[in-house]
Length: 48
Image (cartoon, rainbow, N blue to C red; front, side, top):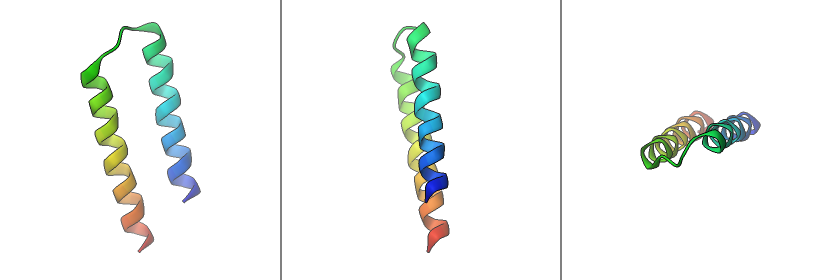
């Protein structure tokens, strides 16, 4: 479970770094949301 949390934190920090220097991009935000959703389900599926 700690691997999942670490990956999510990395995604969030990377998104913050990118968004701080660029304007808001709704499509990019949606893609990150989809990536996180898939990652969570892959990790949780592996725990069963």
